[in-house]
Amino acid sequence: MDKLRIVGGQPLEGEVHISGAKNAALPILCAALLTERPLSLENVPQLMDVTTMAKLLGQMGVEIGARSGGRVELRAARLDNPTAPYEMVKTMRASVLVLGPLLARCGEARVSLPGGCAIGQRPVDQHIKGLQAMGATIDVEHGYIHATASRLRGARIVMDLITVTGTENLMMAATLADGITVLENAAREPEVVDLARCLSAMGARIEGAGSDVIRIEGVASLAGAAYRVMPDRIETGTFLAAVAAAGGRVHLLGAAPGTLDSTIGKLREAGARIEVAGDAIDIAMERRPDAVSLRTAPYPGFATDMQAQFMALDCVARGTAVIAETIFENRYMHALEMQRLGADITIQGNMAVVKGVERLQGATVMATDLRASAGLVIAGLVAEGETVIERIYHLDRGYEGLEKKLSALGAEIERIR
Image (cartoon, rainbow, N blue to C red):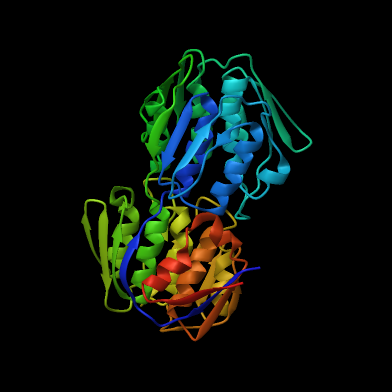
């Protein structure tokens, strides 16, 4: 099993290109299920989750062309197996995103209840309730969601809580429904907007994506399209947080600064100098960061996917920070590993109190989920001596060549096989 070895203490200097967004690419790949015409995608990151999704779509009957240089060609001319088996679903929660498009296109779907990172409960009840409101018959038995519908019909759906994948699933299903669907209390994340843009390029009629009310007018069929996946705002934020913690100057290219207002604001609060021009971001950090308190919230609030990275920054900051995690109830497992590096962290329910220390000390730690892995990498970059991070298969799910990009910036980091 691969590990990462990091010798900390090096500032980061240079230029890094941002990859396509994992959380946008996965639902957009699923959008190929909605049409028999080809869907040509660019800027798709080469990640474990993307490979898993491609295999999942392929076993359903989707033809997947050569994948190279961020390009993926898909064609779902014939879907002869509308099933997502447990063996392929258990490692990736995003696999539930095939449910809506399969049901809309085939009239039937059998999807295993999803797995993924162990960061707390992430139920799919909002997906099920929304599809039932659109006329689907759904049974949950033996660990599978079995859904049928001759044709979905438009409905007004008020979601009990904000859910990104729920919004995406129902939006995709509604594109082929009979009539108008209105999603209220919808997720506003940029990845939802990116999916809506791709669907619109395919001929869908969608209004309001990016707001909490999305209106979809169903059409008889969708066409093919060529679409470029948006930049990954979480990868961007991870590099920015790494520079703010370790020091240095880095030029980030191919980013989407407009999706990072809360992250950039907090980094400036920590003392980083950040300049934005077009799709480029320049960050410079010449001193020890100041502690920054934060509270995670749905977009446009502070992203829960950036919480671990900022905890790592706060571990070596001047002062004390209070972090409140409001999205997932089990997302502080990385704090225990950071304590092994000498961090002063106290957990009180959904609150973490982080008292900054002058320096961390290298040790062997274990990654528990995707973003925890990134937080531990940042902690390793600022720790004295050698840090070894185990179970980095979590990291490979969401970061494209992270150790190679950091190495190019001057970090002493390598993958141990």
